[in-house]
Amino acid sequence: TRNGIEFAVADLSLAAAGRTQIRLAEHEMPGLMATRREYAAAQPLRGARIAGSLHMTVQTAVLIETLVALGAQVRWVSCNIFSTQDEAAAAVVAGPTGTPEQPQGTPVFAWKGETLQEYWWCTDRLLQFPGPDGQTLGPNMIVDDGGDATLLIHKGAEFETAGRVPQPAPGDDPEYTIILETLAASLRRDPQRFTRIAAGVRGVTEETTNGVKRLYKLADAGELLFPAINVNDSVTKSKFDNTYGIRHSLLDGLNRATDVMLAGKLAVVCGYGDVGKGAAEALRGMGARVVVTEIDPICALQAAMHGLPVVRLDDVVDTADVVITATGNKGIITAAQLARLKHNAIVGNVGHFDNEIDMAGLARTPGITKTEIKPQVHAWTFPGGRSIIVLSEGRLLNLGNATGHPSFVMSNSFTNQTIAQIELYTKPDAYTRQVYRLPKHLDEKVAALHLDALGVRLTELTKEQAEYIGVDVAGPYKPDHYRY
Ligand code: NAI
Image (cartoon, rainbow, N blue to C red; front, top):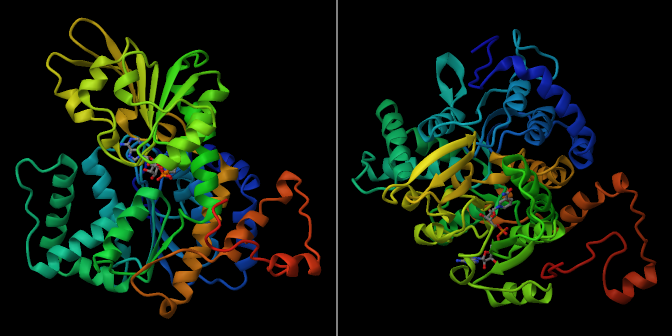
């Protein structure tokens, strides 16, 4: 704590460097800045205590400062151990007008290269807003990316309701063991903490495909403890951030990590959903020979229509130069397949969690050694001398090896986030414990806010044309089932 602001960041003296980058990002985030201006006077988030778990990057800093500008009290952590930009974290703590010595900004608990224990410690700190008489208060709103903050609250409340103490069992997943230990420590201090937090939360707005999947599972089981808005499936999020964002940041990550020439190489993209489409296009743009794996006939057919061979990983793994996973599923590359890759083949993941690549199985390979080439770039050498290069230890390489998606596309995602926060916070009675999407007119509004910056001149419908196609002149222009 300094000047009344709690924080755990790598180095507060990086604040000035972070602030310069934030200023540049603000210019590239017209939707978010317009939203700031639109709601500055009304302060719709006054009284909101927002706990955010989302990659602590420069772009996220602009989101955080937007939420603060609309009246919210905010605490923040990263949703990935490698994705923090330390200068952005420092600048957010210092605040737009503060300094490292006299910080005036927002509490952040995030640094690049956390251990998993530290990661879950940060997530636990996230949920402790300072309250009266030295007490702590829970958040009343959550911004989540991948659902880890939501998971901690739900797991904690589940144990409290059952009156059980979380007890790791031998053979549990190592990260799950850490979550249980974090919960056990917290419940020893305060046995009703998570139940109280859950009761006080008006809602969560979820950023990514994998987090959204967790929310629908909870809602289907009747176990969701508060309303949720699925930000990912706004068209102006998943059809832009997931695709065009990765088209940019996958190459950024590959280049910064390895600087290997991609032209002519055989690149396998596993999963041809929104993210996989962007990944494949980027690699093809570099002149790589791109092939795709899919389980879904529709996505497989799409890949084929784009001229991309659809193959099975097993059939190409011996000749692949680069393998990128983008499925959001687990066990996509097995340890046995990793062992069959060519010398210095590159393996990386752009799906959300690290279980897409069997890193645990790789580490168990008899006689294998791991050498750090530079942070987040490792050569794993098999007995006999053949190596493979694994990026970000199998976690999101575009955030671990680079700085994630560029500002302009994140402005679309984060304008959706901000609108969703205002929606859930200001209309608590309009939503039940279900998962909702933002209405199409707001999706269209987010897009509209980004047109001027690109010099787009939209054609206006005439009244007759609008009637002819059955829409309002002011939109929405498409039915909800339209797929873009
Ligand atoms: P999506 O559902 O559109 O695409 C995933 C695709 O993988 C689907 O088409 C599915 O059929 C396919 N798939 C599933 N299992 C497979 C298997 N065993 N083999 C081959 N293909 C398989 O999801 P989206 O939006 O593309 O997201 C994918 C992942 O990327 C998620 O984990 C999401 O959270 C994450 N994500 C990462 C971002 C980043 O910055 N790195 C940005 C946005 C999302």
